[in-house]
Amino acid sequence: MELIAQSLVIGLTEHAPLVLAAIGFALLYRLTGLINVAYAETITLGAYFGMWANTTFGLDFYTVLIPAAVMAGLVSVVTYLLVFRPAKQRDVGVLELIIISFGLSIFLRHGLQFIFGYPMRFFDVPPPDSFFVLGVGVGSFRLVALASVLVLSLALYLFIQRSRTGLQIRALASDESLAQVSGIRPLAVTILIWFIAGVAGGMAGAFYGVQSSVAPLLGWRQFLFILLVVLVGGTWGLGGVIVIGILTGIALAAMTLSFDQTLYAQLVLIVGFMVILKIRGRRLTETAKV
Image 1 (cartoon, rainbow, N blue to C red):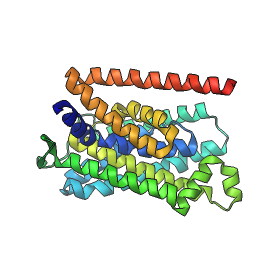
Image 2 (cartoon, rainbow, N blue to C red; image 1 turned 180 degrees about the vertical axis):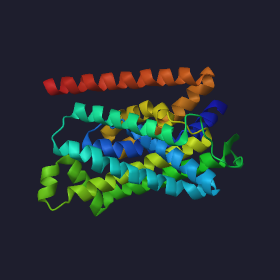
Image 3 (cartoon, helix red, strand yellow; image 1 turned 90 degrees about the vertical axis):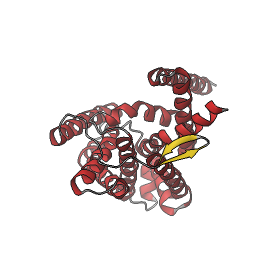
Protein backbone atom coordinates (compact mmCIF):
# COMPACT_ATOMS: atom_id res chain seq x y z
CA MET A 1 0.00 0.00 0.00
CA GLU A 2 2.87 2.35 0.76
CA LEU A 3 4.36 1.78 -2.72
CA ILE A 4 0.97 2.44 -4.32
CA ALA A 5 0.49 5.65 -2.37
CA GLN A 6 3.99 6.88 -3.17
CA SER A 7 3.62 6.00 -6.85
CA LEU A 8 0.31 7.84 -7.13
CA VAL A 9 1.50 10.98 -5.38
CA ILE A 10 4.93 11.17 -7.05
CA GLY A 11 3.58 10.14 -10.45
CA LEU A 12 0.78 12.73 -10.41
CA THR A 13 2.91 15.61 -9.13
CA GLU A 14 6.45 15.07 -10.43
CA HIS A 15 5.34 14.04 -13.93
CA ALA A 16 2.42 16.47 -14.30
CA PRO A 17 4.43 18.61 -16.80
CA LEU A 18 4.61 15.55 -19.08
CA VAL A 19 0.82 15.63 -19.41
CA LEU A 20 0.85 19.37 -20.10
CA ALA A 21 3.44 18.99 -22.85
CA ALA A 22 1.66 15.97 -24.33
CA ILE A 23 -1.60 17.94 -24.58
CA GLY A 24 0.12 20.64 -26.61
CA PHE A 25 1.91 18.17 -28.87
CA ALA A 26 -1.32 16.20 -29.38
CA LEU A 27 -3.15 19.32 -30.59
CA LEU A 28 -0.51 19.93 -33.27
CA TYR A 29 -0.31 16.27 -34.24
CA ARG A 30 -4.10 15.98 -34.56
CA LEU A 31 -4.35 19.16 -36.63
CA THR A 32 -1.37 18.70 -38.95
CA GLY A 33 -0.38 15.03 -38.69
CA LEU A 34 3.16 16.34 -38.29
CA ILE A 35 5.64 14.96 -35.77
CA ASN A 36 7.06 18.37 -34.92
CA VAL A 37 10.48 17.61 -33.48
CA ALA A 38 10.99 21.32 -32.73
CA TYR A 39 8.26 21.06 -30.07
CA ALA A 40 11.05 19.91 -27.76
CA GLU A 41 12.51 23.41 -28.03
CA THR A 42 9.12 24.96 -27.21
CA ILE A 43 9.39 23.23 -23.84
CA THR A 44 12.97 24.43 -23.42
CA LEU A 45 11.98 27.99 -24.36
CA GLY A 46 9.36 28.05 -21.62
CA ALA A 47 12.02 27.14 -19.06
CA TYR A 48 14.47 29.76 -20.34
CA PHE A 49 11.83 32.50 -20.57
CA GLY A 50 10.70 31.80 -17.02
CA MET A 51 14.26 31.66 -15.67
CA TRP A 52 15.21 34.89 -17.48
CA ALA A 53 12.22 36.83 -16.14
CA ASN A 54 12.80 35.42 -12.68
CA THR A 55 16.52 36.22 -12.43
CA THR A 56 16.46 39.50 -14.38
CA PHE A 57 13.47 41.22 -12.79
CA GLY A 58 13.43 39.40 -9.45
CA LEU A 59 9.92 38.04 -10.01
CA ASP A 60 8.80 34.93 -8.18
CA PHE A 61 8.05 31.73 -10.06
CA TYR A 62 4.29 32.04 -9.92
CA THR A 63 4.47 35.53 -11.44
CA VAL A 64 6.66 34.50 -14.39
CA LEU A 65 4.77 31.28 -15.15
CA ILE A 66 2.05 32.77 -17.37
CA PRO A 67 4.31 35.27 -19.25
CA ALA A 68 6.81 32.47 -19.95
CA ALA A 69 4.04 30.26 -21.33
CA VAL A 70 2.62 33.10 -23.45
CA MET A 71 6.06 33.94 -24.90
CA ALA A 72 6.58 30.28 -25.81
CA GLY A 73 3.15 30.33 -27.48
CA LEU A 74 4.09 33.40 -29.53
CA VAL A 75 7.34 31.78 -30.66
CA SER A 76 5.33 28.70 -31.65
CA VAL A 77 3.08 30.86 -33.85
CA VAL A 78 6.08 32.60 -35.40
CA THR A 79 7.69 29.27 -36.34
CA TYR A 80 4.45 28.21 -37.98
CA LEU A 81 4.12 31.42 -40.00
CA LEU A 82 7.78 31.62 -41.03
CA VAL A 83 8.64 27.94 -41.48
CA PHE A 84 5.81 25.42 -41.57
CA ARG A 85 3.13 27.41 -43.38
CA PRO A 86 5.39 28.36 -46.33
CA ALA A 87 6.54 24.74 -46.53
CA LYS A 88 2.94 23.53 -46.60
CA GLN A 89 2.05 26.06 -49.31
CA ARG A 90 4.81 24.55 -51.44
CA ASP A 91 3.27 21.07 -50.90
CA VAL A 92 6.28 19.78 -48.99
CA GLY A 93 5.85 16.12 -47.99
CA VAL A 94 5.47 14.80 -44.45
CA LEU A 95 9.01 13.38 -44.30
CA GLU A 96 10.46 16.68 -45.52
CA LEU A 97 8.44 18.56 -42.89
CA ILE A 98 9.85 16.33 -40.15
CA ILE A 99 13.36 17.05 -41.43
CA ILE A 100 12.55 20.79 -41.47
CA SER A 101 11.29 20.58 -37.90
CA PHE A 102 14.48 18.79 -36.89
CA GLY A 103 16.56 21.56 -38.47
CA LEU A 104 14.44 24.19 -36.72
CA SER A 105 15.00 22.36 -33.43
CA ILE A 106 18.78 22.51 -33.88
CA PHE A 107 18.60 26.20 -34.86
CA LEU A 108 16.55 27.13 -31.77
CA ARG A 109 18.72 25.07 -29.45
CA HIS A 110 21.95 26.67 -30.62
CA GLY A 111 20.27 30.07 -30.52
CA LEU A 112 19.47 29.51 -26.84
CA GLN A 113 23.05 28.41 -26.21
CA PHE A 114 24.35 31.54 -27.95
CA ILE A 115 22.14 33.83 -25.85
CA PHE A 116 22.23 32.12 -22.45
CA GLY A 117 25.47 30.16 -22.69
CA TYR A 118 26.17 26.46 -22.32
CA PRO A 119 26.17 25.97 -18.52
CA MET A 120 23.01 24.94 -16.72
CA ARG A 121 20.98 27.79 -15.29
CA PHE A 122 18.71 27.83 -12.27
CA PHE A 123 15.64 29.70 -11.09
CA ASP A 124 16.37 32.05 -8.21
CA VAL A 125 13.57 30.88 -5.95
CA PRO A 126 13.38 29.96 -2.26
CA PRO A 127 12.83 26.31 -1.38
CA PRO A 128 9.17 25.46 -2.01
CA ASP A 129 6.79 24.82 0.82
CA SER A 130 6.23 21.13 1.51
CA PHE A 131 2.93 19.41 2.11
CA PHE A 132 2.17 15.80 3.00
CA VAL A 133 -0.23 13.92 0.74
CA LEU A 134 -0.94 10.30 1.69
CA GLY A 135 2.19 10.43 3.84
CA VAL A 136 4.41 11.61 0.95
CA GLY A 137 6.09 15.02 1.06
CA VAL A 138 5.28 17.16 -1.99
CA GLY A 139 6.68 20.59 -2.88
CA SER A 140 4.36 23.47 -3.68
CA PHE A 141 5.71 23.81 -7.24
CA ARG A 142 4.67 20.24 -8.02
CA LEU A 143 1.23 20.80 -6.56
CA VAL A 144 0.80 23.89 -8.73
CA ALA A 145 1.93 21.83 -11.74
CA LEU A 146 -0.71 19.21 -10.96
CA ALA A 147 -3.40 21.89 -10.51
CA SER A 148 -2.36 23.45 -13.84
CA VAL A 149 -2.69 20.08 -15.57
CA LEU A 150 -6.16 19.53 -14.14
CA VAL A 151 -7.39 23.02 -15.03
CA LEU A 152 -5.84 23.13 -18.50
CA SER A 153 -6.91 19.57 -19.33
CA LEU A 154 -10.52 20.25 -18.37
CA ALA A 155 -10.55 23.65 -20.11
CA LEU A 156 -9.07 22.28 -23.35
CA TYR A 157 -11.33 19.25 -23.36
CA LEU A 158 -14.44 21.41 -22.96
CA PHE A 159 -13.09 23.91 -25.47
CA ILE A 160 -12.43 21.29 -28.14
CA GLN A 161 -15.59 19.25 -27.53
CA ARG A 162 -18.21 21.88 -26.64
CA SER A 163 -17.28 25.26 -28.13
CA ARG A 164 -17.96 26.52 -31.64
CA THR A 165 -14.23 27.12 -32.18
CA GLY A 166 -13.53 23.58 -31.02
CA LEU A 167 -15.95 22.29 -33.62
CA GLN A 168 -14.06 24.30 -36.24
CA ILE A 169 -10.77 22.82 -35.05
CA ARG A 170 -12.11 19.28 -35.33
CA ALA A 171 -13.54 20.02 -38.76
CA LEU A 172 -10.25 21.49 -39.91
CA ALA A 173 -8.34 18.45 -38.63
CA SER A 174 -10.70 16.11 -40.50
CA ASP A 175 -10.80 17.86 -43.89
CA GLU A 176 -9.28 21.31 -44.45
CA SER A 177 -10.88 21.81 -47.88
CA LEU A 178 -14.36 20.95 -46.63
CA ALA A 179 -13.86 23.14 -43.55
CA GLN A 180 -12.86 26.08 -45.73
CA VAL A 181 -15.95 25.63 -47.91
CA SER A 182 -18.05 25.62 -44.72
CA GLY A 183 -16.86 29.13 -43.91
CA ILE A 184 -14.10 28.24 -41.46
CA ARG A 185 -10.96 30.39 -41.64
CA PRO A 186 -8.14 27.82 -41.58
CA LEU A 187 -5.36 30.33 -40.92
CA ALA A 188 -6.99 31.86 -37.82
CA VAL A 189 -7.89 28.46 -36.36
CA THR A 190 -4.43 27.04 -37.10
CA ILE A 191 -2.67 30.00 -35.48
CA LEU A 192 -4.85 29.55 -32.39
CA ILE A 193 -3.89 25.87 -32.12
CA TRP A 194 -0.16 26.60 -32.50
CA PHE A 195 -0.45 29.27 -29.81
CA ILE A 196 -2.30 26.98 -27.36
CA ALA A 197 0.20 24.19 -28.02
CA GLY A 198 3.09 26.58 -27.39
CA VAL A 199 1.51 27.80 -24.16
CA ALA A 200 1.09 24.23 -22.89
CA GLY A 201 4.67 23.30 -23.85
CA GLY A 202 6.12 26.50 -22.42
CA MET A 203 4.30 26.05 -19.12
CA ALA A 204 5.54 22.46 -18.93
CA GLY A 205 9.09 23.66 -19.54
CA ALA A 206 8.85 26.24 -16.76
CA PHE A 207 7.76 23.53 -14.32
CA TYR A 208 10.55 21.20 -15.47
CA GLY A 209 13.09 24.01 -15.10
CA VAL A 210 12.11 25.10 -11.60
CA GLN A 211 12.09 21.49 -10.38
CA SER A 212 15.67 20.83 -11.49
CA SER A 213 17.68 23.07 -13.83
CA VAL A 214 17.42 24.89 -17.15
CA ALA A 215 19.60 23.51 -19.94
CA PRO A 216 19.50 23.48 -23.77
CA LEU A 217 18.56 19.78 -23.84
CA LEU A 218 15.75 20.06 -21.30
CA GLY A 219 12.98 19.54 -23.86
CA TRP A 220 14.81 16.75 -25.67
CA ARG A 221 15.03 14.73 -22.47
CA GLN A 222 11.23 14.65 -22.32
CA PHE A 223 10.36 14.47 -26.01
CA LEU A 224 10.46 10.70 -26.51
CA PHE A 225 7.91 10.08 -23.75
CA ILE A 226 5.73 12.94 -25.01
CA LEU A 227 5.76 11.39 -28.49
CA LEU A 228 4.96 7.91 -27.20
CA VAL A 229 2.14 9.17 -24.98
CA VAL A 230 0.55 10.97 -27.93
CA LEU A 231 0.99 8.05 -30.35
CA VAL A 232 -0.59 5.59 -27.91
CA GLY A 233 -3.21 7.82 -26.30
CA GLY A 234 -4.11 9.81 -29.40
CA THR A 235 -6.23 6.92 -30.66
CA TRP A 236 -8.86 7.95 -28.10
CA GLY A 237 -8.52 11.68 -28.69
CA LEU A 238 -7.36 14.34 -26.26
CA GLY A 239 -8.91 12.49 -23.32
CA GLY A 240 -6.85 9.41 -24.19
CA VAL A 241 -3.65 11.48 -24.26
CA ILE A 242 -4.43 12.87 -20.80
CA VAL A 243 -5.17 9.42 -19.34
CA ILE A 244 -2.11 7.77 -20.89
CA GLY A 245 0.06 10.68 -19.75
CA ILE A 246 -1.17 10.30 -16.18
CA LEU A 247 -0.68 6.52 -16.25
CA THR A 248 2.81 7.00 -17.69
CA GLY A 249 3.79 9.27 -14.81
CA ILE A 250 2.46 6.82 -12.23
CA ALA A 251 4.19 3.88 -13.93
CA LEU A 252 7.50 5.76 -14.07
CA ALA A 253 7.25 6.60 -10.38
CA ALA A 254 6.34 3.03 -9.41
CA MET A 255 9.18 1.44 -11.39
CA THR A 256 11.70 4.03 -10.22
CA LEU A 257 10.81 3.26 -6.62
CA SER A 258 10.98 -0.49 -7.32
CA PHE A 259 14.23 -0.51 -9.33
CA ASP A 260 15.82 2.42 -7.48
CA GLN A 261 17.03 3.54 -10.94
CA THR A 262 15.23 6.04 -13.16
CA LEU A 263 17.03 4.80 -16.28
CA TYR A 264 15.80 1.22 -15.83
CA ALA A 265 12.24 2.45 -15.30
CA GLN A 266 12.40 4.54 -18.47
CA LEU A 267 13.79 1.65 -20.54
CA VAL A 268 11.08 -0.74 -19.35
CA LEU A 269 8.37 1.80 -20.09
CA ILE A 270 9.74 2.55 -23.57
CA VAL A 271 9.76 -1.18 -24.38
CA GLY A 272 6.17 -1.39 -23.14
CA PHE A 273 5.12 1.48 -25.40
CA MET A 274 6.85 -0.18 -28.37
CA VAL A 275 5.01 -3.45 -27.74
CA ILE A 276 1.66 -1.63 -27.57
CA LEU A 277 2.34 0.22 -30.81
CA LYS A 278 3.45 -3.02 -32.49
CA ILE A 279 0.31 -4.88 -31.41
CA ARG A 280 -1.93 -2.01 -32.46
CA GLY A 281 -0.23 -1.76 -35.84
CA ARG A 282 -0.70 -5.49 -36.42
CA ARG A 283 -4.40 -5.27 -35.53
CA LEU A 284 -4.89 -2.35 -37.92
CA THR A 285 -3.19 -4.31 -40.68
CA GLU A 286 -5.39 -7.36 -40.06
CA THR A 287 -8.50 -5.17 -40.02
CA ALA A 288 -7.52 -3.56 -43.32
CA LYS A 289 -7.08 -7.00 -44.91
CA VAL A 290 -10.55 -8.05 -43.78
